[in-house]
Image (tube, rainbow, N blue to C red; front, side, top):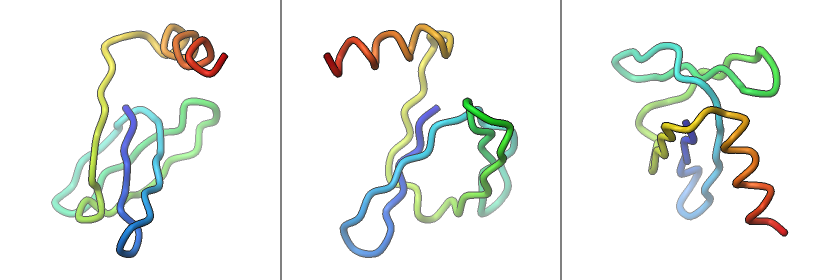
Length: 67
């Protein structure tokens, strides 16, 4: 899943990973490229994109779109 966060008043930052836990005020995402877990504040989340495609197919579409 891809999660976009609003930092400050107009700065969007995104993180992509596998959702591994949800709490009352946070989510935990495990990065796809490494085994790093990111703790994210749920109140700063602006958008979430969920894909039904496997990760390697998503990369194929992303790299094709950039060409």
